[in-house]
Image 1 (tube, rainbow, N blue to C red):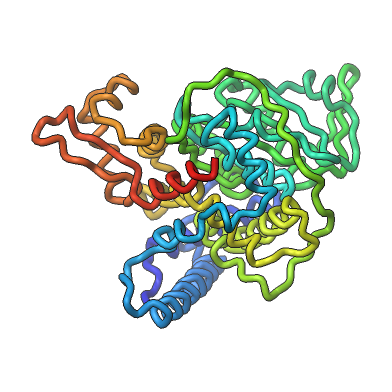
Image 2: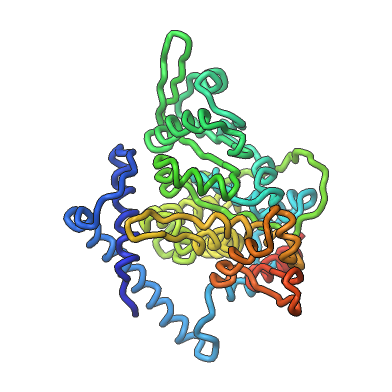
Length: 434
């Protein structure tokens, strides 16, 4: 078993520091020095959490080795995924929901299901993808859920909030933003003034002579579609955005190689009655779901998110308590959209916050929209850049084992890229469902 590197400990310590600052109302986003991290105990805490995570991974690896002595030791969880992603293993309610959406918008049923579960779990999500990847349409296909107050926003002002929300108490609010790019800088500033308070405290009050906004004891779930470049820019330039995004949202990368030409219509997706107050026993193993969130959130939040999504899946399926099959189905359905984001995070320097490789994420989302791969030349024409620029970002995706490169027989413009084999297998199985 390896030990955490200095770089890993500093990155983790900074994450813990900012989470602690956020919880205590500090929003300046200033990074502490290494000495300050040591003196405040965050380095020691980071080392403990990383060692715990490595120990759990090592124990899981030993278990896997003992059960699979004749298999490749480098096999990841992803490679074992397709064996369980079969129609016979899917709950009828899940299949019915996916097919309702895919009947019109092919390849968007599973993403729409994730958004629906996010509402049930009261966990906000960012759908990140290139143009035409289906992120905005996914949000439009997410049905309204009983006992929630749902609204759609293409801008956000105090006047608009007063008119549309006004005074409200003890409600579960669901706000859908089909494209964050429609928000001006002013709208985003208002957004950052209001949203963190509602999410963390459940309250936002603004009363003047002309405006009366009183949101009291409310829950808020946000479903937001955003393009990779804008997401990256906001995290770099807005400390409050970076803190909120990394502490309160899951990041869902949009792929859709099953897409086909469709009519732009709003679906009336039907949702069966769901169970209330679902129970979760300690015997349920959440490790696989935690693994999807642990690189997007702190370990403690990853555990909380995993619990909430497991309960949401059971709730959706009409179960009164979480079954192991609920957890396994969640992982089987969503790893392909959640794990790629984790692989594209990095820090330029030990004292810099972790950032997302926006260019790679943008390219990955676009390559993931082609069932039979796409040539370097086609990608260059789509993005209006040179083939060399495409190659620059594709190299990183190949290294991270997210895409595969097919030689063009010496002619550079014929070089072709495919999504990696595990993701490709996922969508072949998905295609059989619908």
